[in-house]
Length: 64
Image (tube, rainbow, N blue to C red):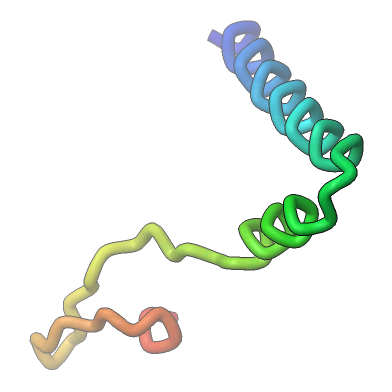
């Protein structure tokens, strides 16, 4: 299992490196800015949580 985990992580790393390299090699400046903006945008990925009061919390800042 450990070797499979390392193998998958390496594949993911190599793919990310390949995508970044293709953005660098493009002449179009807009593709660079789209790539950077996608990286800056942070998705929570955490669904609504239930507070102690029973209220559903959907705001990311309140989930902390």
